[in-house]
Length: 233
Length: 233
DNA sequence: CGATGAACGAGAGCACTGCTCTCGTTTCTA
DNA sequence: TAGAAACGAGAGCAGTGCTCTCGTTCATCG
Image (tube, rainbow over all chains, first blue to last red; front, side, top):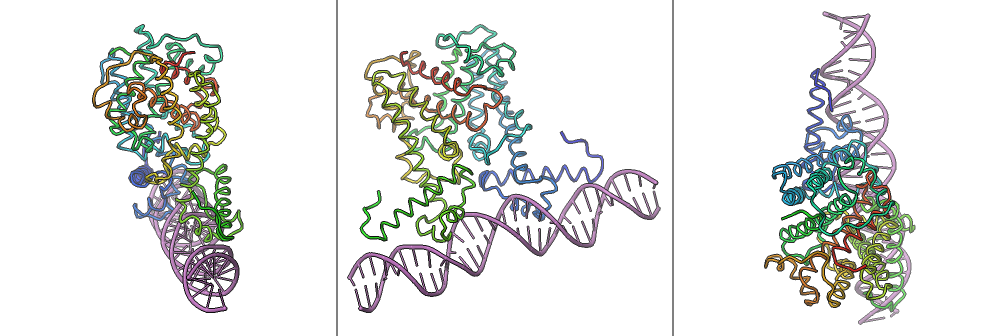
């Protein structure tokens, strides 16, 4: 994080950095990630465009900072919703987490597009984004670990996994320290994919004229996922 | 479609339209949808940038034309892969279709981003894109109709649907003319969401450092979906 | 306290973009 | 064959990301 402001200059710097980020965020609500203009941000703050470069070395870096902010915001929303549910109401925890992500996405659609839409350039995610980016999947993993600990079986009978299939998810398996069986881990990743896929299809307009009530349909799909995960009603 | 070329001018027009589209497509392989430059396309063809506007009234329209082309290309790939499998090998048909979409996405990643990533502007999809866009989901619907006709049960016991849940997917239900039960229809839409979600997570870098072998993991997730759909091995 | 150097803001400028307009030329059609 | 429509090229406008320079302000150290 940033060090404590010792001098007036330091204070002004972190304040202006915040102001730029905030103005960029405001603009992002209106125009979408690709059209975000650094000059427009500078204009809104009444400063020369060149001055912005004292705080963010390029547009890329500004967008990366926005990325981190949005990952944290959506992650916090999901964490809050999930942890508000009693620990053993596993199914409700999943539904709350999934619903929270979609709610955040609906009210921050351009931000969602920034996170889960096409990455802006060729783009290799900088190191500082991967932590915040993992908050949502980590909620799912935590939930699955609890479910595993409770000894709740999966929705459909598990299949015997091949060595290659286990190896494919080895990093995550190691990350959860073996607290989740590889079979259940795979289902959790599928749940994540379904959540993101469903939200993207809806927000990016692919369900237009096909699905009428997005709320109801989303809820229904997530119930289906819950069944597959074996989460008891 | 375009009418038959009657005069030399007509002929040159459709030829140049094709050339522009092709050059744009070539550039799209390198730079991504947001960075696609109309002037660069014109340069590559050795013409003035203003001349391109005789064929596409704006950059938007050019991109829309690319969109249609890519929807058709990926749709054709999925259709071909699926129809190459014997009709009653339902599970294999699903796996072939899903694999074909992912293969196409892997070799045409920017194009995939154009189709399923964040829509470029605020963007309401023009009427001429929705037909081609439906080719992939239509393959899934056709498959599910066959499965339904064969009387194959779903993977997990169906839940009683509410009136609202049925109403939410009414347009699609009407489209398939009632040949697919609403419960199965919902699972099919979930399968679609999982397919797109999984492919997007992989291609947009969200599985980086988490999943090691994308091929194996994708296959495994799609097998899970097949189980949920009740497709026999 | 005062001088040195770093950080800063403003502005001009470069190369690029999408797009418009004009102006000759080519081509079709009546 | 004459008039009209379509065309290609070029200049130009407003906008972009980014760089460089040039005074000014501020912090630090002797």
